[in-house]
Length: 72
Image (cartoon, rainbow, N blue to C red; front, side):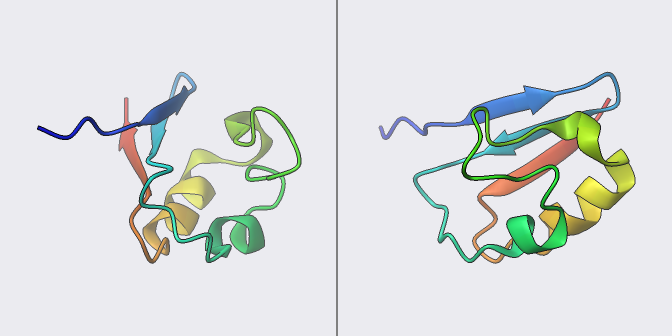
């Protein structure tokens, strides 16, 4: 059985999951919401920078599906 590494980021409205092992680093997240997704910052995902609906739209464009979300 393979253990998946999944990072979790959350607010009162949304939980965002990132699977670094399948991330293709296409940069769609960074281009779509640079205030939220910033690879130079730690943690690199800061969900309180944009409305959760915008974050969902950006995540839906992730080509590798390394990013996913769940509304609370």
